[in-house]
Length: 242
Image (tube, rainbow, N blue to C red; front, side, top):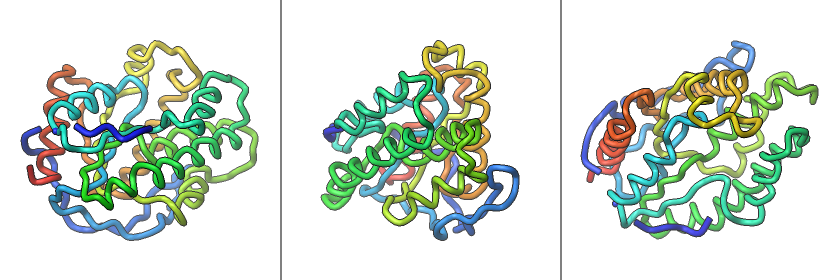
């Protein structure tokens, strides 16, 4: 989507020492992640992503951040490009092929990187994205696991697809919410907003957090929306040193 430039105040769980990137795989087995993550130091030039299952309130937090950090570059996935349009069409199609759908999302991500993320970071911007690669890992891994495509470890598979070209976030704010509440909030309007599916997605997010605990900053999304937004703003202020 075209970059939206817009500007929070201070503190929560700060990054600590670097961690080796291995964790539980799709079936509880260890999976190897592409590289060792080094926690980001406070910087005005960062890629910060907002993640969480549908209904967790991350888009509301993203909108609040736009008001508090007006000089940042704000963006999201799926984008509003024709790649993103194809993704949205797939979301509304219950019988979309799960592997084809994965690669629609991946194509949109690649375009997003080259058209928005990388140029903004090269310009020294703070970039804040509503969903990014972790959404794909969590959601599409759940979709593949429930399908008959025959991929034994879909989470590891999708990460491997992204590893050669994707740019990892410097920090990820994860809005944590149980699947039933999330489905009730989101209205169960499409295949990605159903209780059982969202429970599997949430489990995948936990695997990602296990693998990179220093990159993720958990926010309790059961709190009132204003409190959630305040906590997200505090985290961004701490991460950027503002």
